[in-house]
Image (cartoon, rainbow, N blue to C red):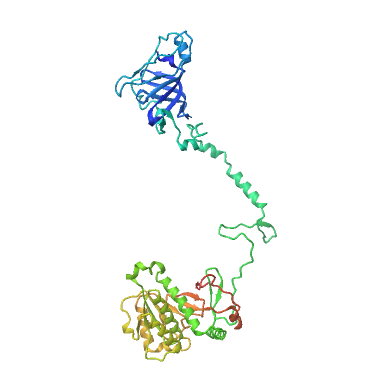
Length: 473
């Protein structure tokens, strides 16, 4: 009779997949052919479930670990019960009857009360829930006994208690008083060592900072760090808010003369201007996204429009550096006018790059190019723009539909000028006419004391760059 075995401690071996379970027999159901264990252990670890139910098809071996109470129920004789086992002998779909083997005792043991288990419990049964969840743990059995995996040994301890209960998120969140916590934080912050400042009434209030502000005390920023004795009538500002005033061309000319007396020769200025302007042009052309070894079949094309003066020499220097960086450069320079010596020297270096040079506008490309660099203007001779070659070159630039970068343009004049998208000034900006051109400033290496020599109180606005944008306030 199955009820005789209730309360016995058994060990059920379910194979390599489910492992070995030990526990007290809670119930044996003949109808569903199942056996249930109370307070089970799985492979030596306490199960989080209070009850586990097994069917006959899952059981490979069943051992009684303590049947003393059962023997006393079945017989009045005394004796020590030994370990016995049930070994199923039927296959799936057949009756599987397991009988209790003989027990060594001082008296005869006549009642065997077999447990008959035929089929697996229904899938929807609540008792089979424990065995289904237990099947998710696949532990190996070595020498017929239970083994623990490395994860169980490291993290299994203390995790079997209250695993079946769901965490109450709403109840736990209700314990958190948000208003009280923030009030405590603000009260603590009010007594901290943060910087204090006085308002108009003299009361002290804590100074609040954004995440991108420096909390260290510093001197107030002076945004007007450059003052000039002669104002050009126009002011600009940098991205950080520093004021950069414009100067008239006469003061600009005196500044360059003072720099040349201290050793900043024209050749040095031409080289610096060429490097900075070419770096700006490379950025406008696309930079590393355009100039790569894998993109040699799409080299950008730049047309340089230069005159026979210092501004033209600056453009030729820029073209030489562009050609050295893999840009296809076309230099326009009229050869029927007298050139300055600085232009001749720059052209001599430019020819060593193997780039193209033309003297007529007819030889310039008819299709749009990537960039046009304008160096036609001259500060010393503004009437140069009335000549035919200048006007033809300006017409070609305005009709080519390519963006134009003007380097050190003249202040203005009655002649036709090239419509530039970007304008690059040198040292300090000149008072340029109101156009849609974006103004940039180039550092040509003039020392601070040279500015001071011509009456300019100067502090560099460039920071870590050599070319910075200027904005109109």
